Image 1 (tube, helix red, strand yellow):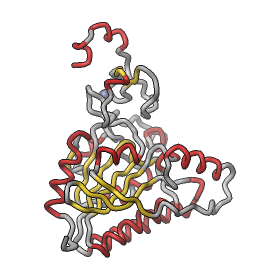
Image 2: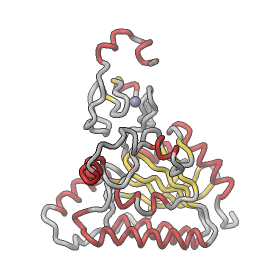
Image 3: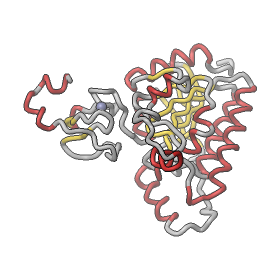
Image 4: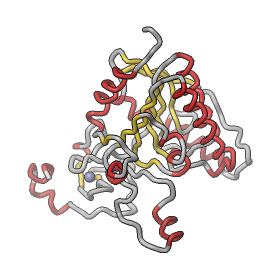
Length: 283
Ligand SMILES: [Zn+2]
């Protein structure tokens, strides 16, 4: 509670977390951590966008993450566009709005990056792009990421964030799970390292496929990680599930996550891991 030791008058602003609270970083003077309920002065939120009390990482765009997650990067496949295969009502307008907002063509940014002198293929899913949903373009970008990395003998770091498959692309969305998984299998068979960083939220088909296929699985504090949502599970099994069932900490306890790392230490940890199992391209 360091925040309140600095200024006692803030205590009155300390409000309980609203379970439905939007976890995006809102504009305004105050922000409320959706995990621990701490009210935070906006100007006290650092470049990592984390809660000073519980270290929860707010949902941030792919480009915001890359500012601190890597030293340098170049993107690839930003020209790919979905064909709106189902002619889904309102989909082109929704896509356009997300493209304008994020500066991305779809829900993942991929390419090559450096942390110090360690080169790797990277992918960052963007939870602000139609909930980070997995459609044909993101599936293709991630597949190409692993295929290129296999060819160039590079390790891959993938930051996942997703609400699941993109319903506007129907079955074609679901097919991306198998497609990306296959490219990962080839990357793995070539003896190359794949590190996945699970961020809030990683759910649905993404969890059911490539988010769980890493050689090393890292998660950010209090990230929501699961397949079906809480309400769907409870309605299906007709009982309440524990409040922390889908928290990163609980998943670590049960062996699904290797390590939980605060954003402030993420780059250094990745660097150490990449040094151990990094690029094999004879650089
Ligand atoms: Zn918090």
